[in-house]
Length: 398
Image 1 (cartoon, rainbow, N blue to C red):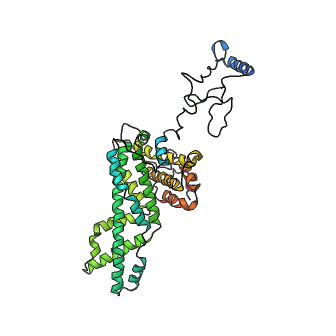
Image 2: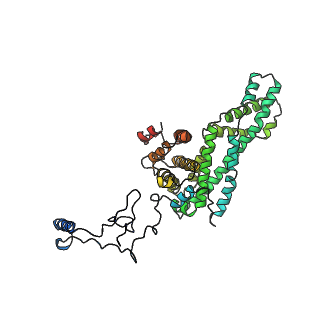
């Protein structure tokens, strides 16, 4: 039986195609013509190959069944995305809507993070519906002597500041959740790739946090009313204190909290900044943990997302465009975290992240859908403008 051997994707099967060895390389064809054998014999004699000038005989062909036989196409394990690519994580990201059930060892961290993630969608809905008090503020500023307009503006701003306080407090909860996940996914004795494959429920939660973070920052960047409202609130509150006027909104946000919130919202991408700082702090506080445990975890996730997006075989399995957006956001998120944590960053030649490949994947998407992500790489990374960053990468992000 000389049935066709399994072939690589993109290479049509042929009756003479060699069977794959168990090592992943390809064996020589089992049969050769007499002319080819004589040519090999002459070459072996000229080079001294084999005993007494005789050519070394090729190993006999592998049996097609029984002990030592190569696995059939049906039996072969699915190919890995790349060395250390984390096939298990790819499966989780590809089918993220499915429930990744935590193992017993994951449950404690999983349950803590899950409490935070349950509120994430509500935060995004509140931010998306945030309209601001721009009209009331303008009227109050244009008519400073009109007490009714002042009260109307203040009454409109105070509940909005309550929402901004809720967003800020959620960022603190998200930071704590991320630190918990980093601790679980980088601990010894397992490698980062082993962690991502063994603890798929936690890996999925890590990806969900990054997905939320990029979505939040995209919405915040396109809503100038947030900073305008909060600036007006602080100015008015300060004026009320000077005039000894009781301010009902002061109980909502005191001066110390207002200062921290002001720094938070002054960032172009506040959630990413929070997570970047948290990751950097995690590494500095865990000096007994090799930094590679953290950076390899991040670079592996970036590689998995990139391969899923650029490989037609994997991309074709996505059932909707939201899954594509999910992978793009996770990829950009881990790149930014890697760039903040790694000593030389994500853009250096020694980086374990294929930055040219990742940027190309982004550029291959419809421009309107990824401009925010490209801006995140341009303006929230740490090492893009370093001398070690190639001119080609810099030009790709211009």
